[in-house]
Length: 101
Image (tube, rainbow, N blue to C red; front, side, top):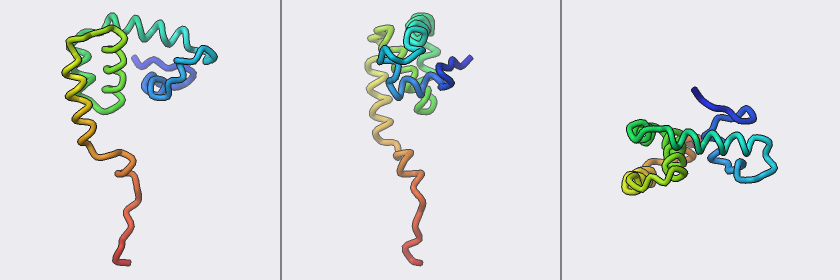
């Protein structure tokens, strides 16, 4: 099940940081769900999330941090180094210009 807040999936809320502000209508519910899910998710499930695309890795990193799972510190470092080497999604989305034309 994918939780949604104000019509937005969790990864978008985490990425935008809007839940950090007390004025957002869903802050309390979002934070409560994040804390509960961080406590309930297994290490195996977190490893699986870390192996998928950026949205899943973002969520896994938040769940790991919120639950203070120090055993994932090295794994998070590995993921960050891999992300650093990946081609930028923004660069990939740029239209290719034919310089010969």
